[in-house]
Length: 406
Image (cartoon, rainbow, N blue to C red):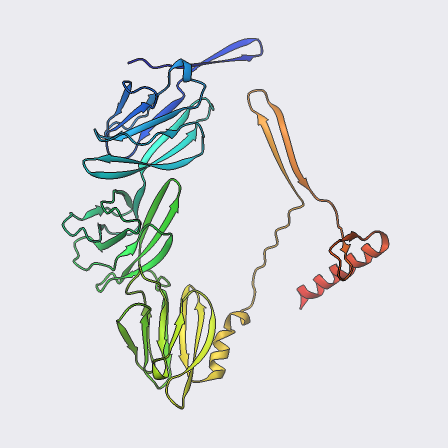
């Protein structure tokens, strides 16, 4: 096998500096043996063993060395993927590789090295589970009960290679050495959720982050504030609560409270309160709010949604004054710190480091204070000149100062 290398020449104060370089370094972090090839050359195949952690040099023939470059990869001895471009540094994406009846989603990240002559192409699993818990966790795809549970050690990560072909993929989690399994959740949509565990761990907090170059499922130990809501019943009546599209009804007794999380994290995540004649009141547990409903034929109760630190609280009460006070509690909190950020200009400079010269400078500078006016019924604004503009600006600054004091 032959490998074409590039030769870069630069004049450094009368001295010719020659740099021998390879245009691409391929880095395999998939855990599988990968094969690379130029799409125009079927016979020149480069193997990258799974246990070889160093980069593999990858190049093109002389006639294509400075043209558009496309490559294909395969997992082990499976089928070749569709061709993908290697030209754009800073880009990322995913390629599908098939092997032994399975589809493997491989994330591809293209990075420019310091000398700007070589690009580093990094191959990683598209789905990655990150365990930030102080204990190991195990995972398994939903409807794949025959598969062995994968394990992620504490404060480490592990690849996830899905077997399920559906777009909406669901995952099960549990603490290692435990039989209590959390409810399945989607890992193909960006969200965060608290998963309930009926054991000493209480629950797990999961955050799913999506990007062009991968999907990251981060699992954390349960902490205060992770639960979607704290339900507080400060009424003489029991209140039925349940999730939309879920038949499990929970009764919150009078003068009781409970932390609530979703029975079906993959569902619509809408909490319903049941009023008189089975009237349903919806709440998505995401924002502050206040409302009321009839609990029976003659009595009305109020619900209030507010934040207590990091915890969302839903308060039920038959006292409208208490409900109003709880709703405005955030407005009454004193402001201790204020940050003011003002930008009078922005500049961007493009510099040639070896030559120590500036190639391009672009700036957005302050144009000064401008006041404009428009006649009623007109859409055209005209600049206000002279003393009138100064008087308007002085009045506006006085208004801002008085507003800050009050």
